[in-house]
Image (tube, rainbow over all chains, first blue to last red; front, side, top):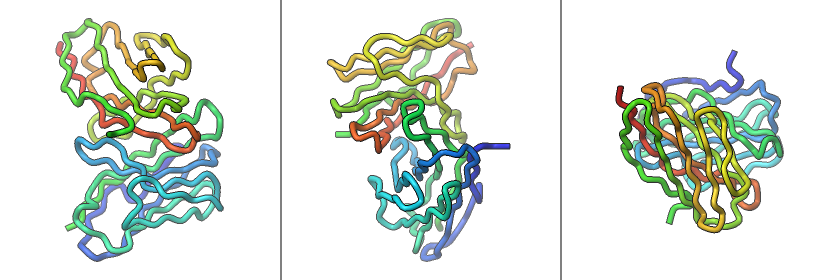
Length: 114
Length: 111
């Protein structure tokens, strides 16, 4: 079984709709991250969380919100989806201090906003 | 200026050759550096990390770090067609709280 899972794997939605992407991990890591990936732009950090009560904005948080429901679950919401949020979204986890904060990625969610 | 810069490529090398991938970073306080490999449509997977100046070898892969020049590289010896992928360089920020990824270099290894 995969250590980091994301649901759904693919999603098509319409402009203005609210959607939620979910991430679960069985690695026991305390830190979780949401990234989006666009062609030619690499991975950009949306939000990150170091524990259930610690949530921080990344470089492109506008238009997104997150919820850390438990140590193992971190959800990303698009309150009112717009076409330029079409991207590949990755959840990642890391274990504080070991080894050097290596991040482990989920399989990704491909989102298309029409 | 992006925190981590990479040439987007594509870099084409023949099978069996050495592939050299390069990366520069802007934050002198960055502590650790990572190379990830990403196949098309898949998630990034860690190849190596390095945090001390010099070379670090793991099988066919060698990571090189020069903090004075703010330069990180990855050498792949005896390149195989299965090495064809996009390679992402990442730096861990000085406060250990943010990863900065480059946009990736696409590598093509030709049989």
